[in-house]
Structure formats: C-alpha cells, structure tokens
Length: 458
Image (cartoon, rainbow, N blue to C red; front, side, top):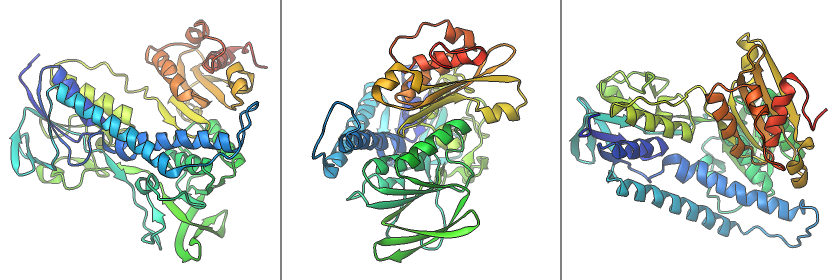
C-alpha cells in the first residue's frame, strides 16, 4: 500500500469529506476544496435541516391536536423563529464537527472554488495543485422546472422552503417524490393546507407500490390533497398569493396558495468545473464512472450525486470511502446492490432491495409476506399505523426486498440491509429472536408470513 500519495478532493459534502477522511486515515496527503460550507447540500440545506424541522413539526402536531391519549395539552403554540434557530444550531454543530474531523486527520481544507485541469491538476482559487488522484464530489443541485409564472415571488425551491419567514397558510407542492412528500409532511404538520401535484401515476415512484399507496392514504387523512397523473400548467398572481393551474384526469383545475414549492428532483452539479474541457464523459450532466468510480480520465474519480448513480447521502459517503480505499491499494467490500433508502414523512418509510413491481418485471418466482402494525404491541401503544413487507425468492427463501412504513422504521431498515447483504433468508430473520415490545418485531412477523403465518397476525 503506497502511503505517500497526494489526493485532492473537490467538494466537502458527504461523499467528499468521507473520501478525504478515509484517505487521510490510510496515510495519504489530502487536500479538500469546498467553495461553500462543509457538509454540502445534505448537512446545510437538505437532509439535516429538513429532518430537524420535521421532528419539531411532528411534535407540534401531536401537541396541538392532542393525539397522545391520556395527556391533555392546551394552548400549544408554534414558535417558528425558535424552530428556525434550532435548525440552524443543529446545522452549525454538525458542520463544525466535520471541520474538526478534517483538521484532526490532517486534511488541508481550502474554502475556495476549484476547477479541473489536465494531468491530475486542480486549480484552487488562483493556485494550481498537482496530485496522484483527484476525487470529484461536487454533489447536485435542485432540478428546475420551466413554466409560465416560474419567476413569480411565491415560487420557491427546497432551499427557500427551509427558511421561510412565516409558515404559509397554503402551499402547492409540485413533485410527489421523496423531497415533495417530506415537505408536504412538514408543512402539513405545521397547519399549512397542502396540495401535491405529481406527474406520475403514483407518488413516491421509487417506493414499493403498496407502501406508496399507504403513504398517500396517510397524507390524505391528514388533509393533504394529492393529484397524480397531473401536469402543472402555470401560476399567476392572485390576491392571496398565487393561482396555480394544472391538468388532472383530463380536466383543468386551479388552486390558490401562498407558496408554490417546486420539488421535482435533483441533477448532478458538474457545470463550471472544467469537466468538458479535459474530456470527461458525461451522461445527462453526470460523470460516467466504472465499478471503482473511475472516470474515463486516468486518476480522476467521481463519487456521490455528481456521478448520477444514487442521490443519497449515505451512498455518497460509502462511495467516497470505497474510492479512497481503491486509490490506496485496498479492495473495498461495499455491497452496492443493497442501499437502504428512507422517507422522513409521518409515518416514516424505509426500504432496501427490490420492490414487488421490480421482482415481477424481472420474472422472478417470489413470495411476499406482509404484516400490519395493528398487530404490533409497540405500534399500538403509540397509536401509530404502518406495515412491513418482506419479498423473498420462492425457491431459496433469499430476501429480495424489505419495505416498511411506520414509526422508527428508518432505524430498523439497517437490520434488514445487513441480512440481505449477507444473502440472508427468511428463515434467518424468523430464527432471530427480536426484543418485545418493539416495532422491529414486525420485521420477523412479516418474514414469518412469507411462507406461513405470523404469530400475531391472521
């Protein structure tokens, strides 16, 4: 293992700082360039601030609506400026932690813009640096949607939605994917009247269809209007904000709202970095990479959102670590087939592996078992609905996919991912004693129902 390599990382988000830390721990001399704030989108304007506000919003909803039986709360009031301060405090603390880790591991951090140059060189600010390997971790930006009225003041993106001065009385969310659903859950919990417009036939396209339908029902039960198979036409000023028109079911509809949130996904952030100038192959703006995250340019790697493989922070971190190991002569052992994903809505969603639709399309002979949380003691105690689905190969019993919706399922999915990464079977889960009373028991019950019957279900 060569311990004297020089590595330059462009981007200080999850993929970039994880790559820098791992490379430094393995003995490399590492420099990291980040023009913005350490932590990238996820920490500063994405995952972390969104989840902080979601946590506050759900607590407020339960307090304001007296949903905890046996406890009466009167006069619950949302302190939005305080909620914003809490969000900012969390971001500041965690971003500071990233900076401290980089300093502790000897990574040289440059708070300047970087651009690629030929021959493993990088221009950082007004100076040129040379390295044995360069890791591009430039992340992603929100995808834009061009429509009449897109430049009106009330039209916002996800970044602005995290820092509104006041909680709007009404909001239309264009996009029923993960970002759109999380913001619908957030502002719905805060009392905003929400309308979701999704172009696909179902919300949450990457999610198993049965779980997505469960989520739609939960949103609608909470007062959210959901339109699928719908197309945004445009927005016009109205006395109370905006008049938004869209087509749904062959009819043109309109709704008034204070804000129109455009949440139609993200795209690789590769502009103005010099990729085209040095001949990096791109597909849809994302850098093409092989199984070791190498681009077509020798010595240049691309990890995280900028390679378009997965727009998940934990996937970016894993790619960054694996890339650093590969550069330093090690053999990474990440299982890229099993990447868990989470939706921090209410209820939460978590999944790993193939959906039932994907299994069917692949022609696999499978069996699926479902277990309702109405039969789970911990979920009943909390008054929380949900379900767990386990999909397995019918011949071998190998687990192909696990899909959950309910309380704390985002914490439980790691256990399912571990089992799947080890090519575990339904029997492996069934034969593992789960603690009682916990929501995690539902995973075992769902596994039992794949080839038989759960103990606590019908």
